[in-house]
Image (cartoon, rainbow, N blue to C red; front, side, top):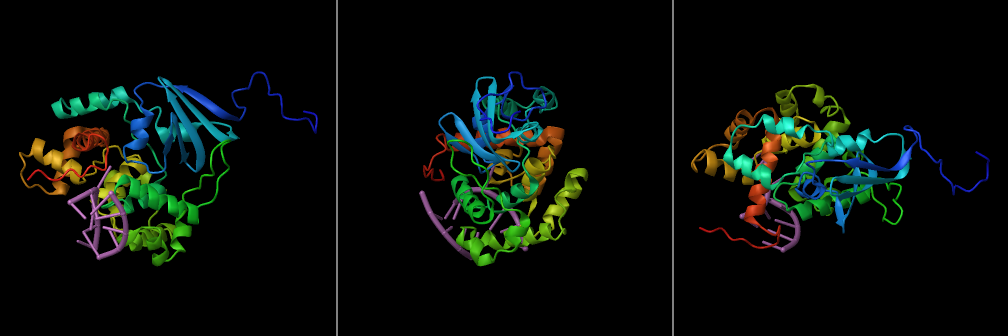
Length: 313
DNA sequence: CAGGTC
DNA sequence: GCTGG
């Protein structure tokens, strides 16, 4: 290519390995809106039909149009495996459903929220996010995370026409912060937990990168060694960040649903519910959890709203 | 009182 | 118990 030539012309037929900034997939059983909005990831913004966010450290714009999914990134990439993995485009949905028991509740929830998928997020981002999630609404979690990213993340190359997005701050950056600074970002009583987790990961005391190669119980236990990480947060990280699809996070919503439907409203511990969920729904219990969770949430607050919704008792 | 944890 | 709806 002659030097000094303006980049006004492109190769007529890009070879398979030619780095590109755009990609289109044909996908089935996938609903981007549900998947990015359901509270498993906290950094996606919707603007009309477009979604902006950071996947695996890279800024991305996504648009879904029926069975077409389109992605755009600021700098050409040689392949798109990172995004396919993050979005779990190749998750074998029919095979997953085939493992589910014949359960009327699950069947209905699955039909209603068809297209809701589990993402595969970076483990540290996932751990930090869910450490910040307790007793917070999704919007608040998003806010805190956004502040953390702007303060300790790096500005990323911007997509044309879009504002600059920031990387999720690596453990070392958070580890170097003070508890007061984290509180100032809105972390509240979770600040010391986040700080301790960042230090543990940064110093190799919690080897997040190795956990996917261990068994689910081992990974879960390793996470629960961290202060502030109990069964619920550990399971969220196992499910959304480590790829243990048998994990069955039990939060208050799921606990309510399970006690009502499977235990006649009896008082059962959350660990019992988690075990029950895993054994009833099997190797992909996490998918079942997500359908049941989303179903319950949307039933209780139909417009994902700021409606008060006082208890009916 | 909120998608927990110690 | 942080903090906000």
